[in-house]
Image (cartoon, rainbow, N blue to C red; front, side, top):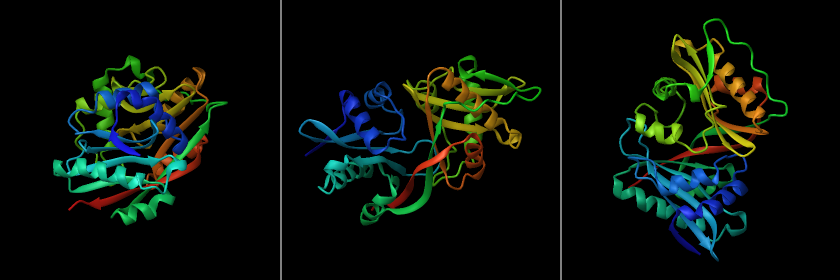
Length: 298
């Protein structure tokens, strides 16, 4: 077993591993390759793989969380090991590599994620469960039919929208998003990397709701073949309670299905009752859960 920094040509093996462990997550080979080759700006992002007989059997990434005003906060993301290679110390070795990357950056508080069965491992390494996240799936055969927009509301594919307007709506809608760390300092550069320039973003299926030339709600679709991820659906606070987030999401799902997507996945904090209610009305069913976990680095 060897732990080493991830390389762009690891992308096919990384995606295959992720699909085995997390079949409800969607990120394609091209997008994964770009993420490794061109990491997010200003976040000190890195990733490590575990290799056995030239095969990728483990993965973890680590970064400074750059979208929050909270100081010295980092993340260890998607630590996972192939089921056939567990109980051999690979997970611990990956966690140590990620922690060793964060500590010199001055990171003092770390957020990680764990599947329920991995919580004993997390606790052994000083991580305490904090918030439960629900993963849900929706069969798009058939897709939910979007209702007609109310007067004054225009639905547009985001390909026809000024990205700066979408960014403003994203920032406004995310300020009160439930989570361990507030999302209150997202720069346009960071948003552009993570959203607008993401190779998996389907700008034809992703939908924005406009009122008076401003984006007031939206639903983003990231796609890999016939699978999609509802990356983020939201509405700006002044327009909540009007059904616009559900309208945008239903329209996005309908457009994605028309272009060949067969199943949609998404995730929500269990405290996000409004979005969970929207997904239930659209027909999503729970398929898995994970926990965010927090630890203090000393």
